[in-house]
Amino acid sequence: MKRHALSTRLWHWVNLVCVVILFMSGLNISNAHPRLYWGKWGFDAADAWLIVPRFPEWSTIPGYYSLAGARDWHTLMVWPFALGLLMMWIAMLANRHFKRDLMTTREEWRWSAIRRDIAKHLRLDFHHEGSKLNFLQKLTYGLVLGVILPGMIVTGMGISPGMEPYLAPLIELVGGRQSMRSLHFICAWALFGFFVLHVVLVLLSHPLKQMRAMITGGRENAA
Image 1 (cartoon, rainbow, N blue to C red):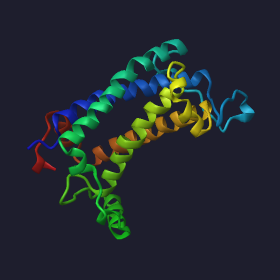
Image 2 (cartoon, rainbow, N blue to C red):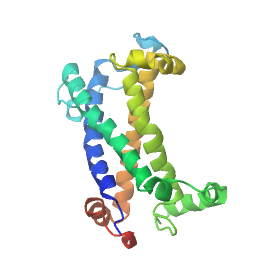
Image 3 (spheres, rainbow, N blue to C red):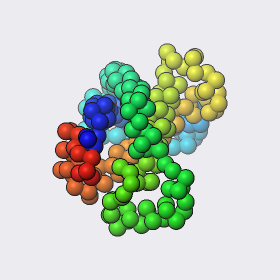
């Protein structure tokens, strides 16, 4: 039996390309107005809750300042990103990947079990029995798949001029359009934090085997 289903592998790599381009084009968009506000509106630096540093051109798409170009790249990648996440959720529910591998159990939420899991991670001991993922992995992937990635889509739609009218109640719920823009920024950097942590943990736990498994599917007993 394959360790990673074909649907998981396809989504993983397509999503990686989408997220990288969305993030780098988002940095270019951020350079156009690097201040974040809460509420319905904002422009003055004195009202900002955060002034974002200007990102260098090598870290942006396109590799020079162009708000129009960055928006084109952002819009282009939104569709495969959103549709890919929808298809991934359908596949996870259909092949029971979500229930079998990602759902936490009541026992795993006990503090003694959580503390033991944290201690194993600190010792770089990633072995676990009884399931494909341990508690911290389930919790992290659950937050990414169920909160951060959908949050990116919803907040992005909330600040899109074409979709903003349809999400007016939700925008009001979070306090206004500038609040939605700030939440979009927070979700993006939360996803970047996960990306860095994910890469570090892969490098610490047989990176070649992990990469091969994510390309070929690997074997269930090869974990």
